[in-house]
Length: 601
Image (cartoon, rainbow, N blue to C red; front, side, top):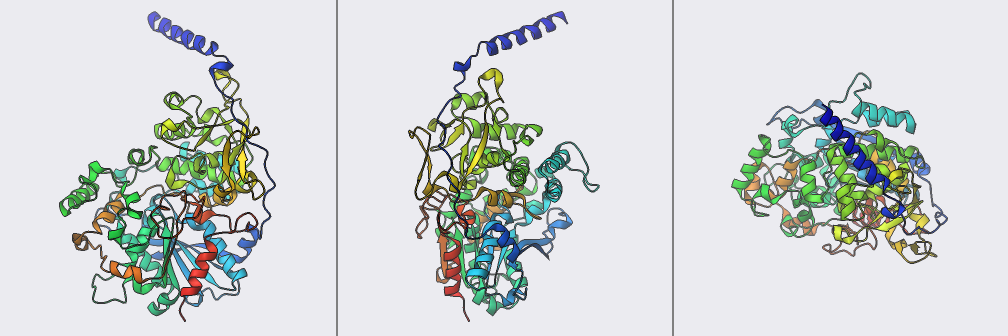
């Protein structure tokens, strides 16, 4: 026993000596300081104005989920979408709308990915075009297994402090809300039915929405437009070539015969066979080559083997942290998504308050790895994790910005142009880590003995860092350009709202792997044996179509349409709609004009 105590005391002595030997020079906490903020742009209308005109409601259509491999929860027996429509001066019947837009989300994205563009499109159509339109933001079926009890109770409280306690106590401390306790973040073994949540169900859900909302097929051909973001754009092409009853000789139920036109946000519209090097290729990266065995050449034998693996839980039924690490370099998982939702809620309710929630959430291995990747400026900091995310001080808004902004996030699929970090030293991330053009905060405290005592980092909104008169956002000495006006486009408060607001969310906790495997099989002749009824790919080119590729996004280089300068992957849905003096919106107006040109009497 004495030897154990001597070892422990010696260990503490060594660590104490190392720390006490660190002076300010041992910790490079200095760096460029951003210049002063600019006056925000004048707004054409407020988001309160939008809320006075637009009705937003989660809508559910009964539709039993597949039961071939277990029984899903009752909540899964509904097709869900968020419906945006005018509050007044409109019958409320989609058949009477001037135009309707079905929007399909991308990878790891829920219906709230379209919260901002949906609300603002309906508002602009009503107030500037004198049109009544509807937007339907699809929520994929696998979101039915998310437990949003904690975040929804936090939202209902309307108070950041109360909401933070409610959410963290529910998800981490075993507290009940309305008699319910959190089961825990799901394991693949607990959702056997998700092996059947594939492309067939997703595509038929798209048909379910448009046929329920606009029952007459001829009317759908005149006024219903179908599109999506990222994977949702590829899915739009699949829908367009789909035959609902599997009989290619009856064409009234073919996708292309049920839409007036198609659109894509940083994605590509084309027959599936032509998308291997564009939209679908990005999605295929979610499938490790070790699983499919032979790259994109998925034979029927390989497909059958993978389905067997999903059904027997030999392969994870959803994208978990281990799969995400392979694809993105960060093990983002359901827990990461839930914490992001809490951060978004706090950023919206109390943007300038110092974030304490991140310190109250137990730091799991996956959470630590993800956050460490964000904070590390070089390999040494990545290896040590010091200073880490818990050592810096951020406002709620700043922490959200760090997670998603294109100048700080290393995850291309979630990047959005929200502004820039402020309040302290900020340094470039070492490009040797594999991420070019990214920054990290530098000052976590005066020295390693006083981490957590640095400045409070705040967030500068997109229109506070650069404008027409001051297009460059630099450090105070004007030796380093942090960002430019062209690269900043989205309001962080509108983005924060979309993270959590309402009955669904922006991030997708459990993304079905069956969907990704089906995306490969749908190109193959044998796919039709499994209900993948993609028969009419040759008709897609005949449909009116428009794409909004992002210049700094994932598909700007492959789209035949001109890429939008400065846009990142999420910007088409979140680019500011009401600051035309700063930068006119380059998506909403062209999309409405496209609809007007292609609506049929």
